[in-house]
Image 1 (cartoon, rainbow, N blue to C red):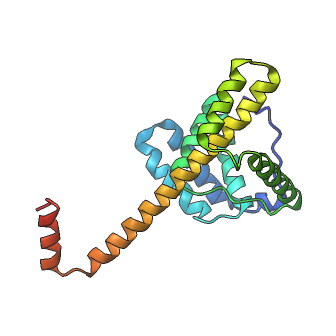
Image 2 (image 1 turned 180 degrees about the vertical axis):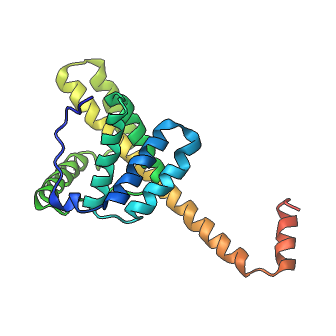
Length: 199
């Protein structure tokens, strides 16, 4: 099965892995595709090879080897996409940004465009935005549908920001609690366990 998307491998990308590392990535990809039993070991192997903070070239070349290996197994593009999504989410490594000047310029343009769109909604509350979506959808034209999609994206972005903020606060609180617990003596820890019903 051929991938319809053209893949460009730069010299920098091709130099990222030696033959043994490439073979390990291929075998871990096959192991991941075979089932859940071997998935965790496959993820650990892949992570060990590309590292926790890979360069864009290293990450991208690892991803390309992963996808090409799945293509070689005869999987459909949808199956490859789903497995890739699951694999890289479980891997837990954020995709590094490209250091290519053209990619940097395009990313900056996307951010500026996104900021402009968001500026139009700054003064409006979530309730006002939701009411605006309802009124736009009451008379569905192509322009109204497009406008309502932009508003829906803004609402989704706001929700993600709130969730991320809550998660950050929770992690900070958890860290402080764990740091405090580490300073307790055995008797203090036993008392605390009794107070919260663990013991």
